Image (cartoon, rainbow, N blue to C red; front, side, top):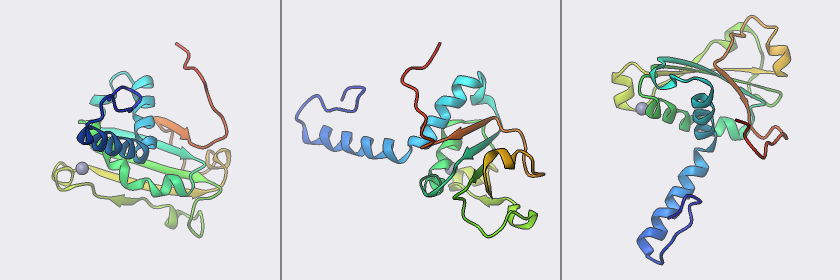
Length: 157
Ligand SMILES: [Zn+2]
């Protein structure tokens, strides 16, 4: 296959491999984008033991992709603690009080559990600029907004 995930030959096995790769790429678009952004802004990201991410404008797409966040641990070998904060007007949950804001911890696979890796998740309903004023806000390594309505055609150097 070529770099655009198109098959180059008419081999049925290659076609199946390309289809699976396309599916996996789609399922992991958020996580792969975050890793690309982290690599662009943190030169030594592969040696970091802790990373804090804010997902701005989080909604169903982002919440449904929570299981795929374990791949950040798998692709960043030194990562032990991954903090995720989902912030947005469509965040589920009844309130923004401290009790409901306490982190929900997810375990990864058996290997990651043995290594002590954890993924802690908090969520806050409301606009990000209001979240900045709360006691829950901690400066993230990266804040990202998906499906924000903004797009960039070229990356500047
Ligand atoms: Zn794992």
